[in-house]
Image (cartoon, rainbow, N blue to C red):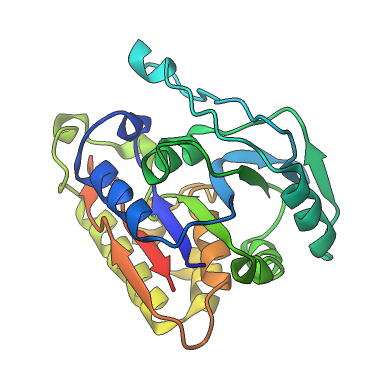
Length: 257
């Protein structure tokens, strides 16, 4: 299976018909049908590493200040206790807990509902241990690589550039507005991705001021490292939705394979 990093942006992309949601819909038609999905979302941070293991994960509306129509959205995809148990067994670098309480946060369902609108593909989420280093997350991801040959779509959901404190609300309706530093950081990270320089991306805090502004906290960046760690030596990669929004966010997304 291919592996995906999706820049998910605003939760409103779940219900808006725009160029980003349309590209997700088209992507879902082109991908090989997955047996299940393993999602690493920026919006599930934990102390320790966990996978969701319930039969029917709930739709989590983990945001505020949006219209009721967004809170009304339900995405009733099934879970996969069997896949959760398999993931728990295959990870040897840390103990993985089975979680029965989380569900699907908007980093997962706001994107996947466009990829698979029938909600018929089982989904589990893997949490981000907020106490661990970027190198830890990258190494952990390598243990998941075998899942790609077993029909599992691995999807990281975050944003390459994500600084909510610096959003330009006056440009909220413009899909191609980015501060100079946001565009610089986005291009710098894309170049490192294309070069296969994962070491520099793992050590992103040494990449200069623009990247410091782009990644003030790591949770939206770490899902990218999971997907990069899954790349084979000869695999192709391609970018899509490569646009800045609201000054301090980019929707840049990546497909491997």
